[in-house]
Image (cartoon, rainbow, N blue to C red; front, top):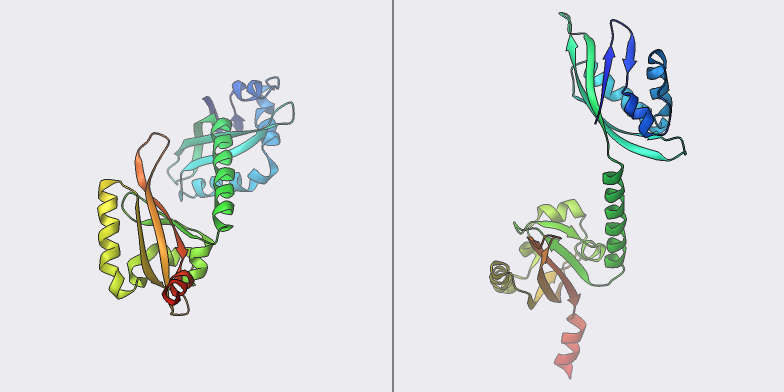
Length: 239
C-alpha cells in the first residue's frame, strides 16, 4: 500500500511517491503532488471523491473511496483509498492520513464475473423453462424471466414469498416432503405438481432440482427448472 497525508494547516496534499512511479510517471515536486494527483483521477470519479470528502468533513461517514487513475500509457487502474483525520475543538478536520491500495486485479475479476452472470442470465431467459435457485437456507435468490412472467410478479416480491403458497393445495404437502427430503440428503429430485399462474389457472409443471456447489465444492443451495406439461397431460388423458 501507499501512505498519504493532507495537512490543512500547512495547506498541502502529500500522496506517496510510489503512487506516481507505479503509474509510470516521475515523482513530482512536493508542492505539485496534490495538483498532479487530482489530474490523474478519472473525471467520472471526481464527483464521488467530492461527496465522500463532504460527508467526512461533516462527520457523516468514513473516508473510503474506490477510484480510477490513468497511467503513462493511457490505461486506467483501480485504487481503494481510505483514511482518518484529526479535528479541532470545533469539529473541523485539520489533518488527514491514510493508505491507497491498487485493486485493478480484483476489479477485473469482478467484471469478468459480472459478464459471466449476464451471459448465464441471457441463456436462462432464452428458455421457456421456469428456472430458479435457492441458497443453503432454502431462500430464493434467483428466478429467470419465464418464472416471473408465469407468476406475474417481480423478482423482489417472489424472493420474499414462499413458493409453496402458489402450489395447488392437494400437491403442497407432497412437494414440501419431496423437496425437504432431497435437500437434507443433498440429492437430485424430480416431481410434478400444479402451480398457480398469474391468471389464476393451475398449470402442471415437471420440476427437476439438484444441489449446487461453489468453486470450493461447498454446498450453496439448489438449482432447478420446471417445464409446463399441462397440454401433454391433457393429450395423454384423451389418448
